[in-house]
Length: 303
Image 1 (cartoon, one colour):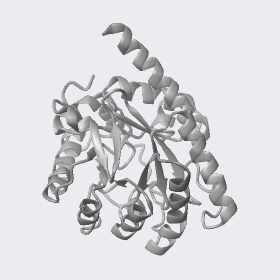
Image 2: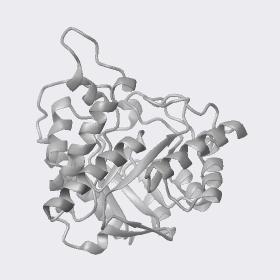
Image 3: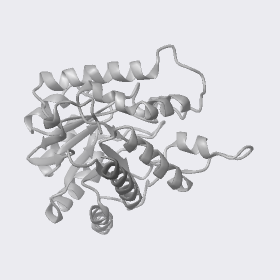
Image 4: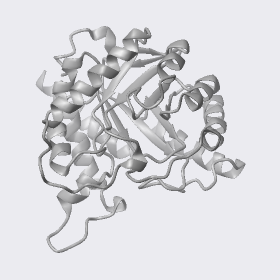
């Protein structure tokens, strides 16, 4: 299991005072999107700035924790392809009150899904432990310093462009550079930046669904374990994404919407675990926890 990651201390991450221990089993990151336009659960909680909606989001997060989530990932801006950007003040209005509320009710590890240093700063002050930066420190040059100053954990993800510049791609053609080389080269540069700032708690994410063809996403999923050559734990985010819909689409029919991709998600999460994922980022925590339990039972029986 994850044999390529030889420094086992990197499975026990100190994230702004909270310990994320990945040494015994993979962790589950439950998604709370406080956005009106995320591709699957946008608008689930209404206007996150209002008290009733905050309570609704809190109830959902606490349910995820009871179901087995070790991390709650809070987002205030959709990162789906083509999503319109959100200003810093609006993103903070959506996320910071919820982070403060969740922190009062739980000691769960909290991740803020943002690429903006101003939002990250406010979230870490409010009680977040990890900054989940889809840009891998490439969109906001102030982000590494903020994360380092707060001793935050970081998720460094590969993406070729900002969400509003991406488009849904069902292209089956090959890129000029092999996808694993593109992703690992990008992530190495992101890791170098993090290490220059003294950041010790690093997680890498290949960015499944972000600027890749359908085939490239599956190629990355099949070779996920190779990312351990970078020396850090690996996060896989496949939950209900469009490339899963492409695989289960029946001939002559439309691609199934995200609401009909749960079974495919469970399958993809299981594949990710079998190929070395240390964290699963999911909408459906109980289903992911069940998949994890089955994989762990198999590993225990075969060890």
